[in-house]
Length: 107
Image 1 (cartoon, helix red, strand yellow):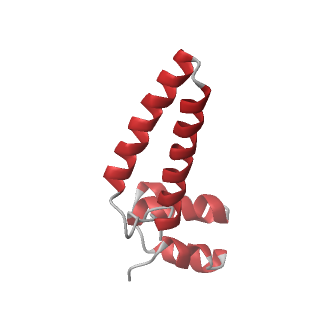
Image 2 (cartoon, rainbow, N blue to C red):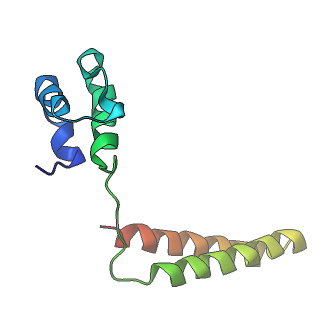
């Protein structure tokens, strides 16, 4: 039976130990002595489950947005070196805006 991290996280310790009983992986050796947090990590390692949910970006081109952020960071560094406060503010505002766009697009 395939399990997910969220599903395992909400199970009681007794059920996690029942699942671990059927697994012959070195990560779950001594499962009866492990507390819930350590057993959860061991089960995820043994079953090959990611410990966190991956968020994906929808609606924008993530690579292009990151490239634009990198370009603006170069402009920011140039503005700092030249002591150009106007250019610095524009660069910081653009970096902030692009990062905000990225966060909003994450699902």
